[in-house]
Length: 322
Image (cartoon, rainbow, N blue to C red; front, side, top):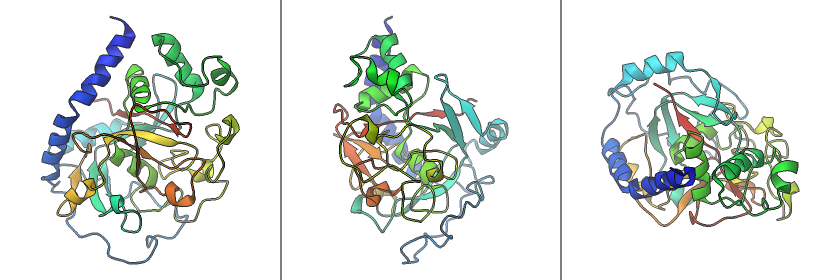
């Protein structure tokens, strides 16, 4: 069967069965791992977490002993063998985000970030960098798909091969991830990869961003507004993931709902997958034209899954092979 038809069928299946995934997620929210403490969230009204800014700490602390009671032993066995960094089938480095709990959301941002709630996630891998023009060009050539704007003359993928691809809609992003044997990260996975377990405001800590941390605050322009991957290591997350703040917004798997977090007021979530349906997909991380407010790791926004914008890209995630 034509590769394009296979990928299109997979994407259609993801869209069609998102309702079932949402229902499954809703069922998961009613259960809570026995090993996860039931203590309430911090009520400290201070504007930043109590952990000192810039402190690297150990993002894995407190996570190693926590696993759901359903298959927890198996998950621990998998983690024992999991490498901290691997290469995906597209050659992109991927870093491990270990299983465990973190606090998702914020009561110091927009209404759709509230309330903060505890989320337990199984371990997963996520791309260390955003998908580049060079990587996406191989996908376009292989499946003979419609290239993003700027690809038609082949200048962008050749001259700017190490810059993250943009002008890709959610369908483009999902198609690439499926083609390479990966998937888009869920919104919860993206946020944990960005902020770790210490409720930091930005991937690097609580200090406001500077030019060494991220690309932001610029005017719309040409390719030079977007940085090549790996240029802002000072802005990496506790797990070593780079460019999660600024440069480009990033598509994630979930449908967007402004009040989705309100369903977690009375409990924790386990591997949440977002609403079962919707009109827009979630975007995360801010972009080169945004202020520091939108670079916060808990900030949420949305986009039509069929629209292409100059400040939106993506990265992929992958389950741990069992």
